[in-house]
Amino acid sequence: MLVPVFKIKHSCCSIWVMKEYGVVESWSNEFNVSLDTEPGMILGFRNYSEILLTRSTGQLVSYNLETHEKMNFGIVGTKNSFFIGTYEEILVLLNEGELLFPNDFSYETDQDDYIENRNAQMSELWTQLLYASISLLFWTLEIFKHLLESHQINLI
Image 1 (spheres, helix red, strand yellow):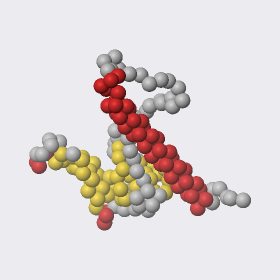
Image 2 (cartoon, one colour):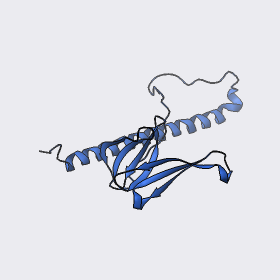
Image 3 (tube, helix red, strand yellow):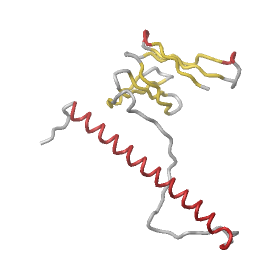
Image 4 (tube, one colour):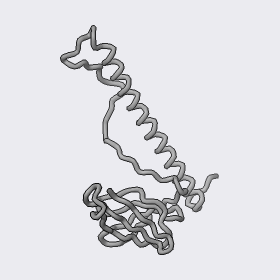
């Protein structure tokens, strides 16, 4: 179990880890992250040695736990505009292929169950695809907005 503890007055965040689940005495303060400004929200870990987090100013930053270096990605959002999720890389050819049935498929008895399960899988796949598309559109609009506000691009 991992718990971030923010100390707003001191612009830092301590990361505590429970080494043995359920054993109170196993809590250990593993890292102290010191920022220039108040920390916003910890989003996750990257490359096993970096924390991705936001500052209270809305900047997306990375903090290397080994070197204590901070990297500002130049992306600014609002308080809850950042999200990190997991994904599984997959290639789906939607206009090719055929429906394959398992070898033990009994057409008379299993057809409805198989089709219902297959439809649920396809529905989940389309939901994930739609979510990914909306997320990509959202981030594109956020970057475009940031570029407009920082006068790096102009609309004519």
